[in-house]
Image (cartoon, rainbow over all chains, first blue to last red; front, top):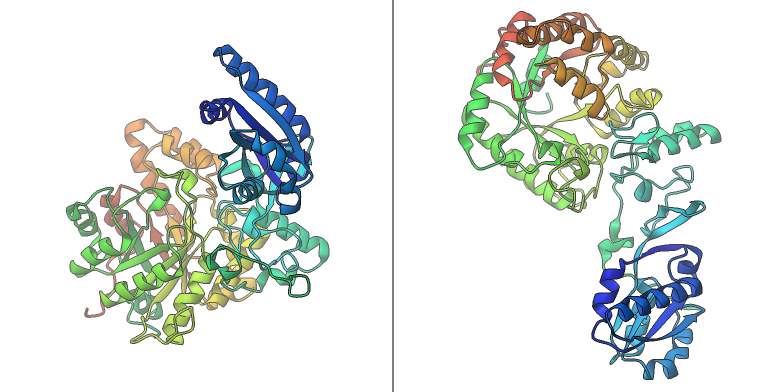
Length: 222
Length: 309
């Protein structure tokens, strides 16, 4: 999933200061799963904002809505009525959702309520960790199912570097050394010989090196 | 001979090689580079010039290499993949070679997290092993990494680093093999304090015959104080400083610790000379360059061979 964390209250209050009526929009997808911007978080943020403004002697009218998916124009359409009555929108979706609202409602200011972080997985209750950088040319089949792009601090394709210590990364003992994980997995799979095949320089065009990316499925596109 | 590198000449002639290191200043004074390099002149075969070591901004390795070259010495250009993409690295390699710099060491570099710009974007377009391969293809195929031909290709003697002390130990010989496959001519190792472990690594290297495919220069760093020994043990990633070494440094009065540190280095060199496959030493006297001649002398590594250049 795409993970996100809510921005600090002060920052949110600051960007909403000029407004009296806003629409607070959650998303029922990834940000719900990582407890950053689903229906529940919309409710919590709404109350917190109203209380904060009340303390300042100001009222902020907040209309709450949580869409099935904010990154989908079909669902964005559901905002038409509510948005016309609001001076500004605060979105609790990832950056994709925020931009969909901006694209559809050109005259309406929209503010992100969360910092979109990474594509990750849940490690335990309340803990998420990065797993994928969407480089566009997946190597997981060669690296035993552990990604060196997303999980090695130096993105080494031929690690581990000289800083790997007891299975941990040199920059933080809480981070696993990706290449230790890759090696352990290669051993478990009995494919140790893969390790000594040098991986060539990556073609970053499939990643951000080629500019903003688009996927066009001819069979689906109209 | 693949190159004009003095280091290649020394090693090929059967002499034990001796390299040292010079960290460029955190400012613009060329005098600092020249002053440090002069302390090493005549006592080592070539001098590594670090590339923003510990991820702190310093004068560029290439610029400092040129100053050292102008002294009639042989600089070794260090290059890390952290700060530049393949375009920038290749253009610097062309520039370096045009300035007569013919030896380099390919590294990934310390993570920016450790330096003075932890907020910087780290590049890592390619890794150190891919950099070795790129420099080799520039030399042997006359091709840029992108595939185009190079006019007058740079003929670099290609170095890499090896850390026998990092984990997992079982991969440390294999990773050397990968560097050999990529085209490394020589490696300089991490500072060796745990000689037993180094010898064990060398055993693994010899078992696979790798010592005949690459020149291994053993890394030696003299310790100035017991404090430095403890710091290296506890704070420097990938460093293996056994307790006996700490004990030995702490066991002498403060004013004698520097001498003890030098003694430990000299003893290490003496012992490692006997290890089959060790082709020389990389003496990294960090901010202590003036001690290099003394250590080289005591370890019987002087005079350096001359090749009439």
